[in-house]
Length: 437
Ligand code: NIG
Ligand code: FE
Image (cartoon, rainbow, N blue to C red; front, side, top):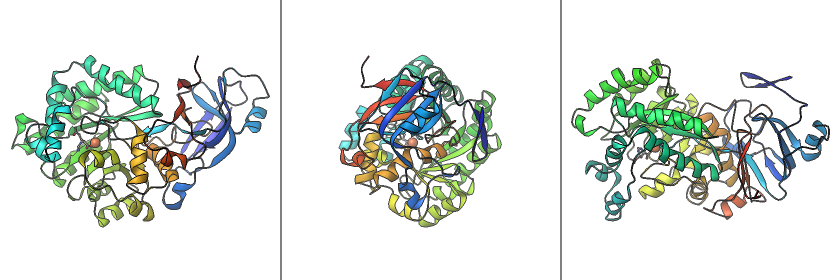
């Protein structure tokens, strides 16, 4: 037995035992190790701690050895190991972490797309009863098992694209019963999938039709009924709010988030997505773990986030689907804000693939592919407050590894938008591979 110290967390790891999976001769193994329990910022976002000709040993779902192939083979006393997977010319990374999605919902929105093509904005479509309200109707009609079936299919596709941990928000039920139904469906998915799932309560995602022109009453319902019901069943680790003009203003968002915090939830904010409202400032003020979107965030708001240690989670797929400008990733990285990336997979931004987000990040937000790797791994782990167990390839962490048909990280930007996955290991299991049976 030996103790691994990481940040404030100490875990006991068994070493010297025969692994149950061994990856060897990996062309480049980007471990993202040694970050002292902090997210990466500034120039450090380009440092990936790469081991050439690397190897990873796995036992009982955990990483038990990391190093060059000869080092790791020496550590396991040369015992022949089955299975051993040789991965020359490939790039292995910590499994991707998609830290902002709306994974569970009913229906689909291809009909809204016609309005979008006719030039209607996101808020105009919502005001016309489409958008979130369209999905609200389908989600209320869906049974819990319908929601599980849909979410399972999306999550399976994510796994095949290298995502080994996903966050999932509620927010299409918008009454206590249906919000709980969504969160219970998320719970059920956790039992069915090898990936990690973080659950977020987003009861303040829109005003449901029965509360039209009574936003304050709906805020009271969220605070007085939904938050206690969600915490009673321990259904969500985070609480999020769509803080936006015409949805929940800063004061209403603050009251909801503080109530959730008091009830023991951690905080996320959909901040400054469509108009600059002060969502970034609010996220910093309430000590949010992350503020997400930030397309319109002010300099003061970003500076406040930097001071409070709030992660900036950027969602370029949303900017693409809204056909708007992209978030100012370069400014954020240069000012020292920790940047994470996620898909925002939802019925409006219906794309599960982080490869699409990687392409947009590099082409549209001018992020360097190495910064993108940090953003999708260790920084996203911090955005989910799970950096002690995932986000890097280090002894004692969960064995989540994505192996890509890439000779180096730069190739990720060059081969844009396609799934480059060769093998995915989630929780120590090979869940996808091109090696064949
Ligand atoms: O992150 N803006 C609010 N929520 C989602 C969109 C949800 C939807 O349109 O269904 C977002 O963009
Ligand atoms: Fe979202």
